[in-house]
Image (cartoon, rainbow, N blue to C red; front, side):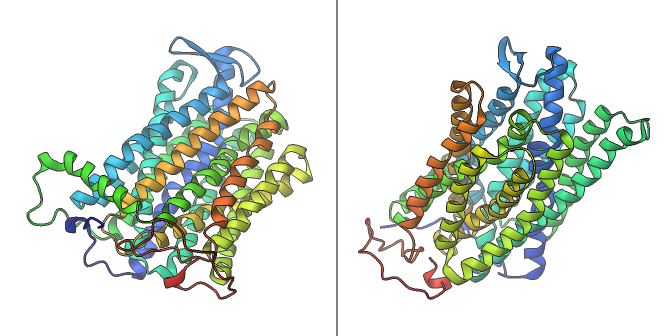
Length: 480
């Protein structure tokens, strides 16, 4: 018998498909997507490399730096910092999201993590050789804030949208993020390239100061535009009458998480999808986090070429998110995801042979096309699998987030270990990622043709017999 969800965790009175609410929700993508673009993918990794060179007085970003008494290669330290941040989120998000569901304060938790991330991001303005060690911790906190807020943001999707519009709304959010982040990146590039183009500092800004100013602008953009969803999303309902006092939050938070865990035992499709997502997203996220390092260290691309590539990824990503959303309407979610993951397997093979020039830009275009598709479809597909109108949406999405974060940690460590064992050759690491995509595809294929959302009260512990193939497009009640 499935436990009855705590009534106080529900989202009463929220009108689904309300244009004002859904539009406001997508603006958080617009607000926070500047962080993964400016900080994770483009300007910050390049600046990090320059700081490593300044601290070590060498010409290589791979040179060991003295960090808390340990000598760690500069590129590895950045990967370890990201992994540490994601590990923190993986450990605490189940507790925080269950507390958010139980207390009825999901928006409050979204705001807290947003401000932690935005303020820390702005704090990177002070990242200089003299502040290297403390800036590493600031970078970790910024990543924690970004990752933590995404859990609560994603959990709003099944609350504010009808199931038939999950795919399109999720794609719209990612597209908003791509557009907004590109706009800020272009502004930051104008600031950074200004002194180089003119030969003299503009507005008294050197290249280094202009770069650090871009980190400050990213934090301001993030916190500033986040006010739109904060204003338009429904207010927190708070605890239901008769709920326990504040002193009981911690214990009941664990109880709420336990309820969700018990519910997943009756939902084999949910467990299968999480396993698929864990494996294929491990590869996707690893490629996204090491792409700049690969172009810099393996292909020896200059900063201008790297930035152009990243802009290309974002622009093509908009098309990919919408294209695969439309494809999912015709052939079903898991089939569309399976095609996207198969393309990622081909990307790994092509990445082993790619060289600087047209082949690299062609590969980047394909990555951008499938990058947005996988992220958008994964979010909407998961929303379709979890129980409809569940009051535990934040707790459910904590499982989704923990799956992602643990995958990133394992993916980055695996990538770095293979690179180290092969003498720093990242091509072998990239080729090895095909194993993750192959496993993800295997688990996705087991879900094709099946009704994803199960009756949690009567769901069987095992799958029924093989499904009959059908070319009929999915409907909300039989989404595939």
